[in-house]
Image (tube, rainbow, N blue to C red; front, side, top):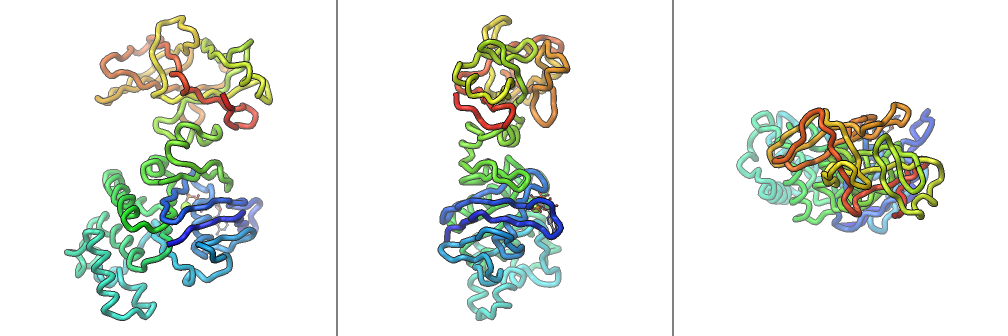
Amino acid sequence: MATVTFDKATRLYPGGERPAVDGLDLHIEDGEFLVLVGPSGCGKSTSLRMLAGLEEVTAGRIMIGDRDVTDMQPKDRDIAMVFQNYALYPHMTVADNMGFALKIAGTPKAEIRERVEEAARILDLTEYLERKPKALSGGQRQRVAMGRAIVRQPQVFLMDEPLSNLDAKLRVQTRTQIASLQRRLGVTTVYVTHDQTEALTMGDRIAVLKDGLLQQVGTPRDMYDTPANEFVAGFIGSPAMNIGKFHIEGDEAVHGDARIPLTRAVIDSLSGPAITVGFRPESLNVVAAGTPGAIPMSVDLVEELGSDAFVYGAVTGSAGADGKVGSGDDSNQCVVRVDPRDTPKIGDVLNVVVKPGELHLFDAATGERLAQ
Ligand SMILES: Nc1ncnc2c1ncn2[C@@H]1O[C@H](COP(=O)(O)OP(=O)(O)OP(=O)(O)O)[C@@H](O)[C@H]1O
Ligand SMILES: [Mg+2]
């Protein structure tokens, strides 16, 4: 087992204008499950492929344990990778698929058999060892792909969206299996996904990338409770945090009819005339109209989910010039989680206040989190 360190690792593709991964600094502990997450094109696969040795490192270095692997051949790095398209050899049995890399490496037959059987036990594949891949379900095939990595007993597992070929239900099952398997094996793992739910549920820590730049690294709780900037705030969490630009009037942040009191310290720390305010759907209490700090919303839609209900609405009195406050990209619709036994009607005005300690504030000019 081993630690992994990206030390200002940079990848500029030939002909590229800016690096696909730019000065990545990231230290992963021995045995840790680290999830690299971010939107499409942010540099997740490139980061993983640099670690695997499949992509040249333009600047900086990569360490596995105390070995500098920056210029080392992939086969010498002692890693095993599971890809999104984990094509299995269709004409080989499950056992031969799993043992193939060992056979190529010249491992004695008896040892291959032993390691394959052990991996099959761990993955609950023992009864399928003599089958061909076409006679397996999607989830079983995915486990065979995991098995191919496990039998190699590497120092580090690298996984690039290994669940994206599975349907939604199987994804949820399999992600739980992979996370518990990783904990059992204790092998340092770097796992790539664009799915923030996968990141939150699987990772010991999460690293969020955007445009090749690392935004924040932390535990799922850190990322959720104290996002370092507006991007992470909007990216982590489902339904997404309600976020919008407010202007300052006296000691309040104002947007339409919403007025949120701010401390002097927050106002003094702003670099410009505006502040970005964020509040999660579950961070709101319904209050009477006129309550200080209340955000009034006109109700457009009520979504009843049995255990929860979500109200979708727009902040009242907000002229177009104020910009948008909402959940998700470029949306002017806020989401509020309410008691499913006490839901408002469409067209009502719902007044909510942010629960103490659950207001997120960012400098509107830089997007950086403000201390409160
Ligand atoms: N071989 C290549 N040559 C040139 N540019 C590339 C190459 N591979 C990737 N890129 C670019 O580098 C950037 C990062 O790509 P990368 O594949 O790392 O993204 P990603 O985060 O894995 O995205 P996705 O979620 O879509 O898989 C993108 O802008 C992409 O177009
Ligand atoms: Mg990718």
